[in-house]
Image (cartoon, rainbow, N blue to C red; front, side, top):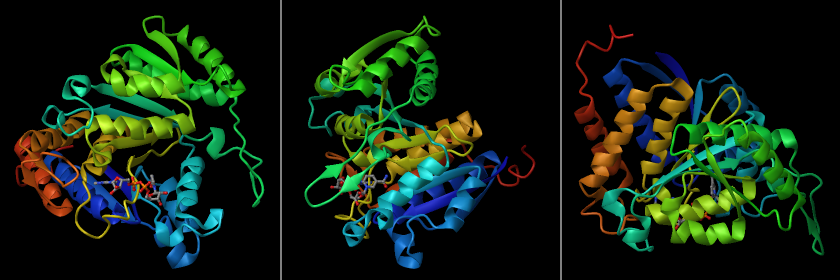
Length: 365
Ligand code: NAD
């Protein structure tokens, strides 16, 4: 297949991890006979510096007409004091909203080679395999009115029935193809938005009698997630809770640098690691590129339906970790690498999973 992928490196470690992910996609394209055209554009602080807008019109137009978007990370101390609409993060929020991305999928698995990498005991993290589905375009991050003064600040938490319905359906569909368990996380004992959330989730559940559904309060769920993560399959939650819980879940995996995400719902999907721009290690070839490379695998699967290609990339990452390769954030990795060198190991592993036959690529569909 031929496809156009818009690449948004962003700030901090973003360009470093994106470089490795794009190179991996290129190896997959060669191995399976696809042609991917990569088109780079500015977002975040880099875009503020270049043209005074964290989401320039050109970037938005390119993304709207792309087949998929791959993003690194945005933000950093250089822009922390900018007004809200000039902050890198507001560019990303606007992009997600403009593309109509309401469902953020964050898979969390614990690789057998990394059971000791988590500060949580190996016998607790072993076998963890969950999928957090975070509502992405509503809730507190987008609520109006909002207000800031030195004396008072206001944000508004709003959810509509339709916003809850559509993300709940995504979660139930995912659960149907997994272990058929879904836990919906809210704060229905305190918040009206959560009571509506619970009501709508129960309504959607009637269409999926084969799926076992539980409701949990976010405070006690935060504890359950870290003490018995194996008990959970699909975790459905709203924007703010999902943001926090998925960073908590990253502790189980061993590093924030390992985890990918896919944002879906509109016509174009956005794929990005869950970590930020990591200013403390930016420009030092220290960032773990695996979260971004696994986001590229999600891109292949969810944007293009290329399941075999996605699996080849995931298997290459799996073998790389199994053989003890890793960046400095992975405690106990036998072979320590920088960002670029770990990317190269993964690319070699892709060709071992799926050797490229010279000349064959041009005649394969
Ligand atoms: P962060 O995720 O950037 O970093 C948290 C910690 O994890 C740091 O110690 C960092 O070194 C480490 N880390 C992150 N990614 C890593 C990787 N790939 N490999 C190894 N270690 C990694 O979170 P933060 O420090 O709270 O935020 C930094 C900036 O990123 C802020 O400006 C924030 O707003 C922004 N941010 C952006 C996104 C995004 O672009 N989607 C998400 C979160 C935070």
